[in-house]
Amino acid sequence: MKASYTQNNFLAYLLVLAALFVLVFFTKNIFSDMQVVMDERDRQNNIKIEKEQTLSKLSELKNILKQEDSEALQEIKGFTGDFSEKDILEYLHLYAWQVNSGNERIIMKNISVTWDQVSDLGFNKATVDISAVFSSESTLFGFLTHLTGQEWKYRFYITRFNYPMNEKSWNIQAEIPLTLYYK
Image (cartoon, rainbow, N blue to C red; front, side, top):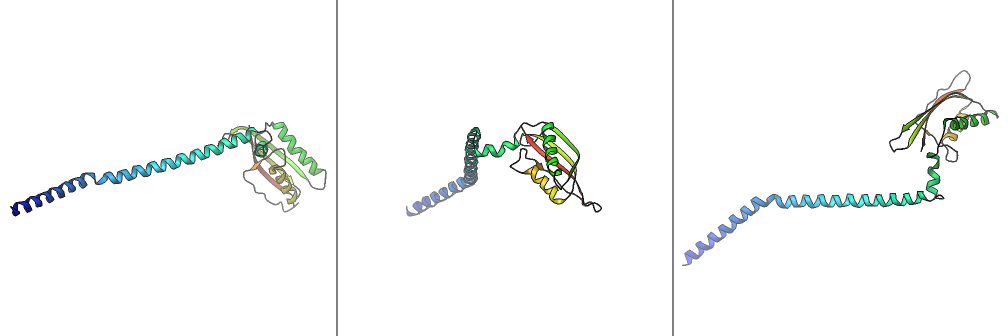
């Protein structure tokens, strides 16, 4: 009887081992797949939380920009004004006239304005190409400051800039490509 008990015991152990082997063999990827799914769900939740935070920040900014006296609105007013070619030409020539009334000189040789472009962010964009002769570097840099300063009517972006020095007269001839964003 003891022999049959140990034999039955051995068969039971063998059956349990075989069942465990089959269980592990057929379910070995279930736990790793489950972990991948849980990690992906956590990643998607994190992305959702980040997008919700971004949306709430944008909503706050939208509410701030709706207020007429907000500082943020005042900062972007120079980028979103309605402009005409006449206004821009008048603005540039008025500055040159003010400089020319003193000891410095700006001679505007050519100004061209290209409208109806759209930027990557959806703003309308005008390109203003200026060709001018400046009497000195300080005059040139004063003009560039006037074009890009925050306190002025228009706020241009200078896309690229270089200038050669004229060795004979010390005048500086510069080509200045500007970008103006408007609504």
